[in-house]
Image (tube, rainbow, N blue to C red; front, top):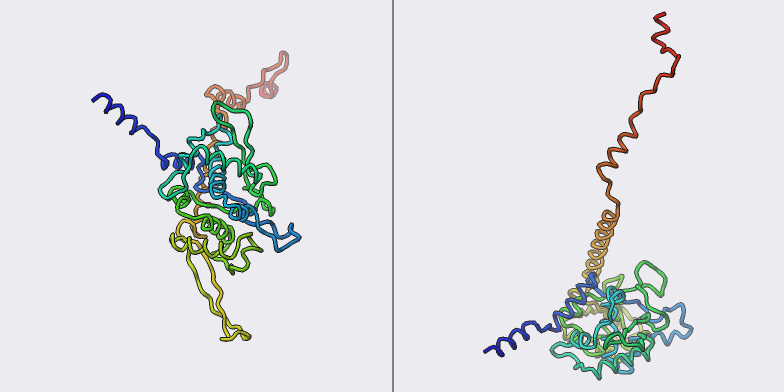
Length: 320
């Protein structure tokens, strides 16, 4: 009976993958992960060959590095607090956070392989020296070209960013999407950062994002099947076509991932950040003691001048 009680207690105290993901996002305290545009596409102005605009996402799809891409997204989600954490997260915590029904299977060996893939892509640096039983992992910029720092607060083309809401983790979207589906979620999120929808012919996938037309098609189908994508068909005149008209297809994300919802999440986060800063500023103002207040008040009261010896006042002179 005692053994059964201990087993039940241990089971009750076991942390679930859902709780692990919730704690990671709670500590980040933003409601989203900020991702630079260069994760999806190289800046047009810096690319001589406009046929090769694909970046990290395209590379991950081409190399079938699904686990590595998910792990990198989780690292950046946790980085706002993990950067200052005294100890690195143990491997078991990463594995547990990435575990969900229908998701890729994770084990110490697959986690190690994913870290190695990210290091090869230039997306992380794994410290050689162990801290306890774990090694500290430091992310690099989303294109692997520079050390990582937060993109917010700057407007140049290497710091423009879009967001992916925490619903990606809380609603197991990360577990439900295939690699092409994940790639298209990131691409459409980037392209609808400042607008509601985007236009993407399959044939432009290789040039714009480093994805084959088939990967673009499969990714879009996956998003539709998961209820994450809205498709709008626009018919327009095409005088030289056989029918005299043609169709353009527009894509937009739905729910928490839609343009308006993401804008609202960012606005809420900015408001909360401003309130925290204001509260911190008030907290940092030194308190003035009662004695100090009395001293300041006393300084404002002029003391009566003392009469010098041998000098009479005006009143006395007038009386004489």
